[in-house]
Length: 295
Length: 295
Ligand SMILES: Nc1ncnc2c1ncn2[C@@H]1O[C@H](COP(=O)(O)OP(=O)(O)OP(=O)(O)O)[C@@H](O)[C@H]1O
Ligand SMILES: [Mg+2]
Image 1 (cartoon, rainbow over the protein chains, first blue to last red):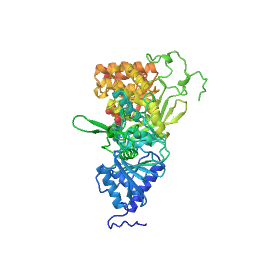
Image 2: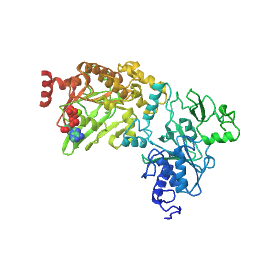
Image 3: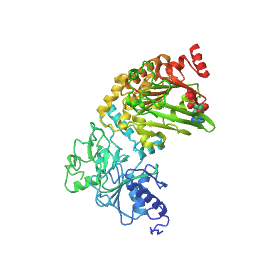
Image 4: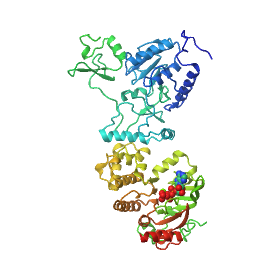
């Protein structure tokens, strides 16, 4: 076993010890071999609380090398506390270079979004997952949900969508919208907006999902079919936004609502901060940025 | 063995109660004396079925055939093994010894306990029904009545919301639940309604065989009578084969063509319902019948 020098007396490269990384890599390889299948793994304690992305961090720690460039986003933004601290963590324990640029990153760890810029071959998207089991809310017994996956017994997923339509007149699920991977396993895409679901389909990038508290890893290899569940007469649709980004004018991207003042003023801006900044740097302007104050 | 063209009896081994035409009101098809081709073999055939709970006997050496379209009541005192037998022949409880064979829709006869789990589940939700004494055991209490009825359809591939809902509404009507209750959860239903909903949920896929364990057990007498009437009608209209466990001889009298009397885990008498009730042969059955008549 070769231990890579880190310059830090107390930590192995990327914090986790080599046997642990090997164990996690085995789980990742199995997950890649069976797209959408939840592989159990021996989740370790990390120097951060559950719910802060310990699953994603362990996956990233197991695949990252000195030559990688890491980007971390939380709800699409590089500058939130969670994203900043995970990025700082890896800069310290793995001495990797970090970036906010989607195109420059080799590994992107994410909570709740897929970047707007299309990912390419060689890139890895690592999702932080709180609850990996899409059947959990319908069937709380783990023994039973495992059997349902094994037998491809997924009628209950449509029961949930049926209830949605019966109650709301349309499929009201907008986050963690269930998908079927490569025609076999039903998978929870983590609490990303359903807006991002189509980006998972036939993606050139490798997508890895880590759930720390629940001790599960799953994966969508490159060029894999990912289909959102629906009904023939209520087909899957992505959320649409009435107006473009107020800052960069982008259309067809996911927008966050920003409250401007206490008199009801608000605007909609790109949730993907890197995408928005790049567009503005290229001269694109939205309605609220026309005076150049926000550039 | 007799050949198919043999006109002496439609069955290789005559069974008491079969071939007799004097069993109104449910046996109209038989009443013509036409040996319908499909009825030349039993639907389900259990032989030498025993179940031991440790050293305690659940049921012992029971052999029983269920023919298409016939209603068989299993009666006996508490602890006589009725539920154990029902569960053993419906693949819910693996017998200690014995075999259970079933004639599939394609005519093939299969050993139920040698079937794969996926195939068995499919059989249970397409060709079979199981009505529990407690509706909460057979319903999803937290999803709407419509979804409860539609679940089997969705589990077997139905993907058109409008059609699923229309079928569910139709079935609610057939079990006398007002269609405007379609979006209510069974929690908001009375005991009798829940039981009728459970029946609709089971019948929606057009099963050939339905198992029932004390289907009227938890209900008031007046509610019981209405449910029995409904069941009688459905069973006749649909030509269902039913195995119904009951300790209530009145239920057996009203619903069944044939009766199986159990005591201490063994079958001590079988025969046409009217014959068993009017002219019981086993001393225990005589006691059972007279005690009811006196009451
Ligand atoms: N899970 C079990 N473990 C041990 N013994 C059991 C179990 N289930 C049933 N038995 C025993 O097997 C025998 C038959 O029980 P079973 O439940 O089949 O009777 P039953 O005729 O359905 O009675 P009831 O009318 O009260 O429902 C009884 O002696 C019972 O105590
Ligand atoms: Mg019982």
